[in-house]
Image 1 (tube, helix red, strand yellow):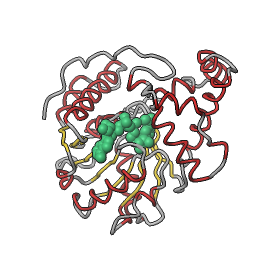
Image 2 (image 1 turned 45 degrees about the vertical axis):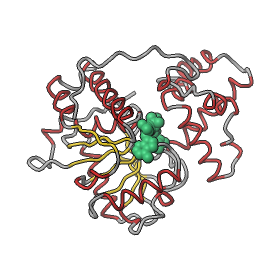
Image 3 (image 1 turned 45 degrees about the horizontal axis):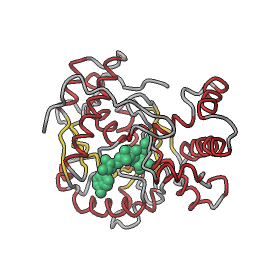
Length: 311
Ligand code: NAD
């Protein structure tokens, strides 16, 4: 996997004296990674979720992601501390009003995202860019309840955010060109390489990877090979950095299933028919790394080297 923590933001930061705020909605796997990335990029960040418990979990995940970047030699100890200090937390959207960029990273559920964007339109500054980190839902649909859908754009980060170089940019049908330009500049300022996709379900990347994961789950379900041998086949046979079942655990099995259902709803093509085994694991609460068990089991992660500061 490429390591894309990004250039030292302070050196290349065109924002220098006035710091710009990013408001991240949802402090889960992606929201915490995006918060860490934006803080390293020289932005002030508010990381928001629905309860203190989720916000605290997100803050711990931010600290872990930064620790891991320090261990890989990508971030210095001073920048780690500075990034942690640049992040505060919130419950509810009220404090979105001071942000230039809002990035929504709530669960992959169209009704939920539509509701959140309607609330964000009221809570955010009228000039703020409203971005979604959806991995599969059409941006045009997410924006469809807004008075001004032209300010909504997809900025799709990859997991783990600090290590993955790519950002997929998805303009909705009504997104204004200047919003796309500003979103591109923003992603580039984080050290990311930007590709653009048309607004079809799953865009380019998710459409490709969803089929890969689903096929591996079907093979496991049908008894074609063991989970270990399926993953080893992809790693050693195709040079994939991890097997598709391990990748599904990293993504979150609930998210992987939601994505397949979005692709099915969008295309009605049987190639997107989610394997029943995936559905059963989700129903059993075995969601992958985030719950400690999915296709594989995972030990509890190390605590961060020092507690993240409280906001
Ligand atoms: P997650 O389940 O880890 O986190 C979602 C967070 O959103 C949780 O902390 C939850 O409490 C919070 N949340 C729920 N309702 C909310 C609300 N009303 N307001 C604010 N927060 C709320 O999910 P994730 O994996 O971080 O995925 C988030 C988004 O990013 C999804 O759209 C997903 O498709 C996309 N995405 C995921 C990955 C991945 O590998 N997991 C990669 C790229 C994009």
